[in-house]
Length: 187
Image 1 (tube, rainbow, N blue to C red):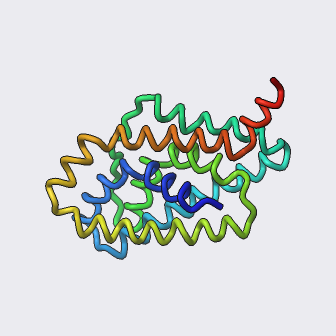
Image 2: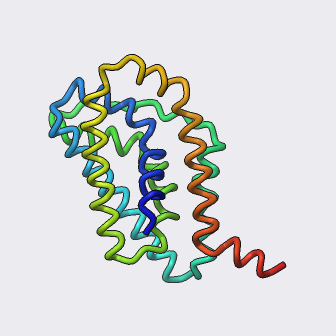
Image 3: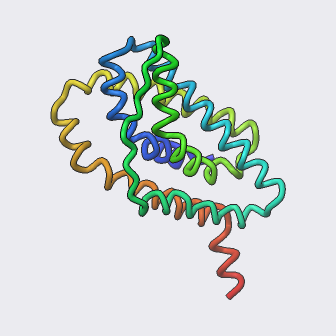
């Protein structure tokens, strides 16, 4: 398990949601935002892991490396993830639904190839690691959300940084799965 890859993956798939977190933290109480965001991450990671394990059962690992094309496609595909907002009485449910509606596609596409080769023990460690990052990032965003400099930098460079991360993750999946080695062996 590569913690740097997990960190890069988490940051890149959630970068656009960090903006939305600023607004959610202004509207809802901190513990409710943390819980809704945490539940969203657990749900999407669990779905990615389950689909990845199912595919790994039927396909050799090097073929799963082809899934690396998903994050690269997302980096090259211009898709605006505007905040789809719904108003529910539950603050946790509101954050959860907002997160799922904005980030489900990216999270599933990016985490699926990253988690496909992991065993259950590593997946549980991944959940704990990503869960810790989720809580930490909400606390950090709460602290820095008042800074206009942060808003300017994210607006100016956030999208390109996210795209670079997506391509890096896709290339790593190609390499880590053995796909590149397998293809070079065919030459």
